[in-house]
Length: 371
Ligand SMILES: Nc1ncnc2c1ncn2[C@@H]1O[C@H](COP(=O)(O)OP(=O)(O)O)[C@@H](O)[C@H]1O
Ligand SMILES: [Mg+2]
Image (tube, rainbow, N blue to C red):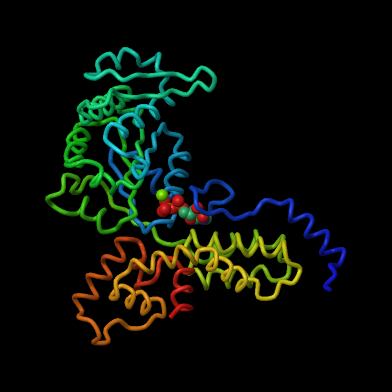
């Protein structure tokens, strides 16, 4: 039986009480956030102008986090709505209004509300003070949206512009027919709002902002977010791993980044698991491998389900991309490969940075194992 030395016992005791220094899955702030110094500075500076910003990257690259940080740093008033969580135009209007009431108490803007064409029901929770908003069902939702967006515009000035962040903005295309047209028409004349529009689906976002026929054609400045720079990410990981791995934290940080290729989310996920195994096991050989295998195993069912839904061409492409094998083998027509790649990219399974790669390195591992 392996017996822990006192030193190890103490260290393990100490670490067990320590919070995991890595975080993934939500917007990260403060101590979990690294680098993006130039991006934050750029966004802060940009929103001082009267222009709008559009930020595009594959999902989980850190868009929501970098925008949250920039908006906070700018010290400006803001409202954030994630369109992925919105189910209808009425829901969007209610959500915007609820967020608005967090900044402007209902009492102070009551006279504006009396101008609404459809009066909302506003209830305040006496205990928490939170305000809830609802509209009578069946009313014309685009009127609600226009009234709410006009209210936001009218309660601000050119000197005191508000920032509205619409996260996962590409969802407007699915929310309601011609919602993009209606929103653009409302936004057209606004002067007291800076919009920051974020999107994870490259092709949909470029269609919205780059296609001449789209109502949002050239609506604002397009900015793309890449992965995190290796050097900064290495330092971030290394510093946090040190407590648990005093001898090899540098090396482990390198191995993690080699595996995840600096993808913000998957790097934090792997690092969090490495750290967890580090404090639980005194025997720390092959800790990276242990953590990877663990992650792949816990997602095995999801991967299997995903895999079953791919057609044969997609399976073939995913296998080739996972192993870095060339796609032009003569087995499939170039046009077939190209359109399948585009679809896989649209659905987030494959990303393109300087080459095509699997979005999820653990899914890549699973595919290679199952092959
Ligand atoms: N600047 C950063 N520093 C460290 N980790 C980050 C950073 N930005 C993102 N991440 C990691 O990526 C995850 C996804 O970030 P998020 O902002 O939700 O991405 P997106 O909005 O592009 O989907 C976070 O939970 C975190 O683990
Ligand atoms: Mg996001």
